[in-house]
Image (cartoon, rainbow, N blue to C red; front, side, top):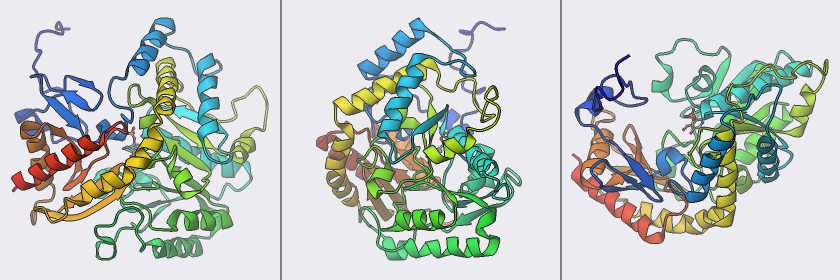
Length: 442
Ligand SMILES: Cc1ncc(COP(=O)(O)O)c(C=O)c1O
């Protein structure tokens, strides 16, 4: 093997995820380090992080208590086998997390990414019904414009066309609810729009078509995030809970983005007073510092599995890195930091300030709609006719090159979601930088 320092600047071999590789490699954008609200480029520029990395760095970057916890954990025990053995901090973390979780979501399974958490939840749903003697419940219902990661489970129930169309048949027996978004009825709404709960009529139609006895679970994000921040219409999640419960269908809320403060609460489920049967989480649980995800499971779902021979696993599922010591240490330190600094309350207090700042971009060039909720926004730009995504990519390049701004963009939609430590003046700074980018792009 060639020594690693042979080609320090070689860009070619890395096939970058969700990135136009050829365009990137002609004009790369690199971050070399990060601190609090900023990334630092290799040439020393401070770039403000308007999207908490990918919605995960809720307490800001390289926070000392989290760094120290990871360092100590790495020195103490690099790895512990998660099958048939445990380590004390896994149990400590699980107790803390399930105390935070709503209702009787009293059990937690661990994985390493949002995609794995979603696959885990779908599998638990199937196994649950089968254990109860209702093995005919195998169908899943997701939603158009939903994002549940990139595993076969996640893309099957997800509803973002580009993420699905290349990959064949995926899981069989999956239907999709309509997206709750309707620009004509909802444009420029702060928070939960009035219109949209009527889209749940489609769930009743699907139940009528297939019969509830064939449906295992409905999975949605409380706020559709990666498609560009679509807050739930007023009453939508409450009604979804009521319909699913009435028909014995499990409700999985994918809170990979919305958990850990993004909406001013520990979970979106708390904001809406809805207790689902499972919650998937990832990202903010470790402040993005070490990969970790998980699934909260209601007591009744867990207990249904606790049958059979006691020497056999009750669920034949798990990952080599489930509850990895470094991730667990990072999560414990992260939860403490969120609590010590009152970051969820801070996000709640800042919600109106952030909403006003983002909404003030209305009227700037190309802006077609703006949506806000918690510290999360979606800013749709009109696509250049016939060239979807060109304007968005132009924005990405200019933000980095000319405005020292990082903001997540998908196609032609900007998705600001700053770390919850953001100050009011930094919200203003982010707003002004986005405005400058909008004026600069073609
Ligand atoms: C709601 C939701 N589910 C799942 C995922 C997938 O997470 P990961 O990229 O960690 O697999 C994401 C990622 O953004 C997400 O937003």
